Image (cartoon, rainbow, N blue to C red):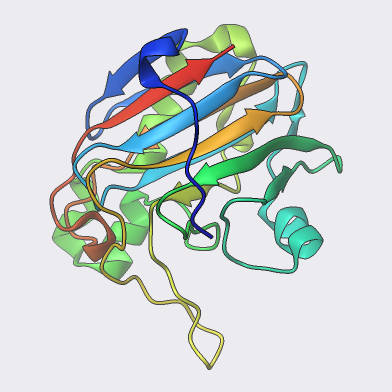
Length: 212
């Protein structure tokens, strides 16, 4: 569902451009609004959310899909945690579809999906693990890298119940905007995967903005 925001970038309290292959780890307080912008189009922002005060209470794709009765995320979707709490709500969306089934790319999945020699290419799971290692004050570990959201990524469910990774449907400047319903920690891997058609075979930067 396409819903535009009334918020102005010039009024944002925080702005940061994250290059392809880099990560972003940042707390978002209850009531703040986070916008993720696909600056050049067809980029995938692989994102994890945690309860800032109890990281074991984290984003759950299963609970989110069940509560909204829809496998795709868009405006109006409430992101539900493993503890049944609403972490954030998507309040604006100019792309219209975001995946939470395909998972984050890993060296292992790159080997299976593309070719054995792709194993040594950088992957989102590596970015997550690097973020965890460089910011141990949050208490995150390898076991906390679980369900994620692939913002801007087009992964249709087939009639047979399978998944296909299709060309992206995003475009330069498309964005998704979320309001935090509690204090959360966001971890974004700006996907480096140039073999995935969802990225347009050309990973590009994203921008993160926060309004108080």
